[in-house]
Image (cartoon, rainbow, N blue to C red):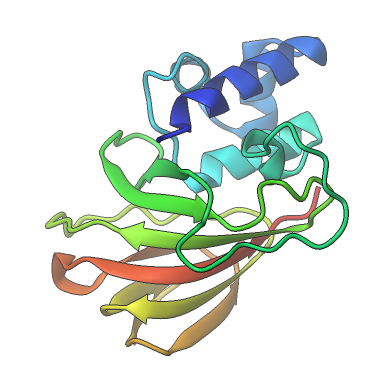
Length: 192
């Protein structure tokens, strides 16, 4: 099951609860009002960078958009092959094509500061990438395939078993090498 539609509803309800207009949220995030509206109404599949900007502007963790209703503050175990339902993100804020499927490993842990995911990178022959930047840090380990990461002015190619850790504020983009499918473990930290 894909829970992408729930994200838009959660953003909208949080924004309304905090008495923030779409215009004000746009100003706080640097996103276009139309883009926020399209995300809230599930017309556009958001990428991770605008979601992080929206979370910060609303004063919530990124995970707030992904959380289940359970409230687990202790240890959370996710057994092999049992990751939570996937969330799909596009590969940039404007393009609504699905590029990655994120399988949350921690949705029932509500007081978390990191977001661990198994990410399926879908085959994509698009060679034009929009780099994105947001506050925080990311750790990636390649589980299957080969991944290419544009990071600032550098490009890194990672094979199965390779890892990378970087500051997310530097413009970056993660994609499978030469459009082939890949799978990664990604841990994302975003300060509130």
